[in-house]
Amino acid sequence: MSIGLYVHIPFCIKKCLYCDFPSVAGGEELYAAYTAALCREIAGKGGLLSAGAVDTVYIGGGTPTVLPADCLAAIGRCLRASFTVTEDAEFTVESNPGTLDGEKLAALRAIGVNRVSLGVQAFDDAVLAAAGRIHTAAQALEAVAAVRAAGFGRVSVDLMYGLPGQTAASFRAGLERAAALPVGHISVYGLKVEEGTPFAGLAAAGRLALPDEDEEEAMYDLATSWLPARGFARYEISNYARPGDECRHNLKYWRYEPYIGVGAAAHSFWQEERLANTADVRDYIGRVTAGETPVASCERPDGAVAMAEYVFLALRTAAGVSYADFAASFGRGFPERYGAIAAELSRRGLVAAGQDYLRLTAKGQKYGNIVFAAFLPG
Ligand code: SF4
Image (cartoon, rainbow, N blue to C red):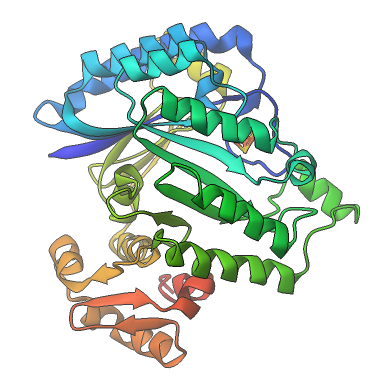
């Protein structure tokens, strides 16, 4: 069996104003202790896979590349000492422009990283500044060039739409710049104003000027039509790739395959259980250093929830739900379990059924939440 391994690095230079991801700004004084705790957790988890191998590794965050080169190297060494990582494993590191240098790039190459995912978000300096990003568009271009020059064959960039000050025209210019770069993968996310973020506070005070609904929809339509026309196929609701450049690690999540997560706030899906590590960085370090488990919650979804999760996740992908795979996973026919719901969604133009699959239509991709809600157990 091959599985995916996720490693969480919960540090950023500064919090972006929209961000509710589990990361803290600063925290340099914790880097060494965190790296040591992470290595300890990795070493302890290695035994889980006595007869298997890791074929995708994803170091995400936060901003993993805020860590100094020696910490990145130590994490990589520990991973390889504790797990059998296949020769052709996909090994991704997330990064942000402004946090990479030659020494870090060399350390990442040395531990076998072969894919870098850069958080670019926009190519408009005013939009970046309004979102609280730490970098400029020029630094994003420099980062892509540096990553490619360092020999990383696979590069992905993240973009966002619906940001304050953004227009359909500036978003389109950003798409054009991204697609012209030597990258094989582009992720495009719409801004969501999450509770507890500075943006939520500004919105509550009436001081967050977002693009109106029509402008935001125009940006969504641009991404979904323009990128595929330039050779970036939409293989998941928010992800576009040139052929063969799909993110194999993330496909495991959408295909309901097991994965192991390590680090503060990391999640695992292992032996039908969903486990979450404590999100508090100091608590994580303290627990692991004391030899205690960092797992803060563990649940085993019941049959109805597991089937619904499986369907939501599969529908996010262009391939959709395969009836054969569903039957192999749950011992039940998809049409028998969900036929009435699928028929109603199909009548509304949100899904399309084939002989052996159910997929979202273009309308269903746009209004995915309506579709996903329909599958929730009553
Ligand atoms: S860099 Fe990413 S993880 Fe860090 S604060 Fe910004 S959005 Fe959040």
